[in-house]
Amino acid sequence: YKHPESGEMVYGVCSTYLTGLKPGEEIKITGPVGKEMLLPDDTDTNVIMMGTGTGIAPMRAYLWRMFKDAERAANPDYQFNGFAWLIFGIPTTPNILYKEELEAMQAKYPSNFRLTYAISREQKNPEGGRMYIQDRVAEHADELWQMIKNEKTHTYICGLRGMEDGIDAALSAAAAKEGVKWSDYQKEIKKAGRWHVETY
Image 1 (cartoon, rainbow, N blue to C red):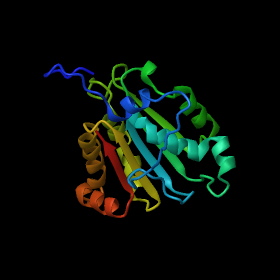
Image 2: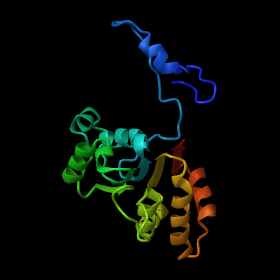
Image 3: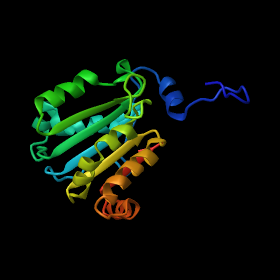
Image 4: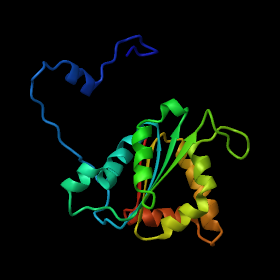
């Protein structure tokens, strides 16, 4: 792309490398290297996923592992029995990545998978403004808080960094109803490896 200030062409490291390859050339791909966004091995765990836009990528991989027939057949030791809830923020309905796939999973596994959209340019929040992911979290904050308190629940957040403050505010309000300070509780679940965030 062209740098907006200098006018110089800026080339991506990976994309430039890949586009420079000749058909049939071999490449080595490794990963994952981090531990932040990995699913627990426990098949009875509950998984809360909050993603915006391309933040759906790791969530889709989790859902495939949990619900895709081929994955379940290939991994007989991992048969997901828990509950997964995806709250997905996108601007418009045509921007819902993997819409048919997600809705098919929800239809096939209604007791194990819940799908909630926050469509900012089409839906309104209770104040009449745009419906963002943090508004959906606020709408379901009490239910999410009850899930988060369960030691078998892992929460994953991926996408735009701007959603974090609103998510924290919603969960703070729900936790406060029980006399719990969310920021302290969040530190505890982070330390326990149950709160996973990858935002940009």
